[in-house]
Image (tube, rainbow, N blue to C red; front, top):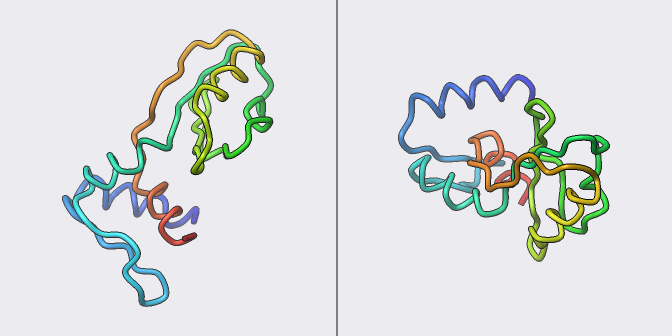
Length: 116
């Protein structure tokens, strides 16, 4: 995936619509912005000052979803995960500097589509 990531970032900048094929099967398609909106509901960007790097690991249904930006972490909420539980865990870990929905990247959408 390390090699695919820069290519997906380029695709994201150049294309309005995409199709993701896995093992000869179409697993996702449509306008990039529509795919992002659909997947944004399950992505959070959280920045906790003073917290351990994996403070979020105690919350059921939550997984790290990629690169950290500064002190922040990108989290993926699986079905049934509660964003308020994530916020509570963040507050227990330290001072919450940022908590909000994150725009899904094409690399995130690709990873989710081929793992389904």
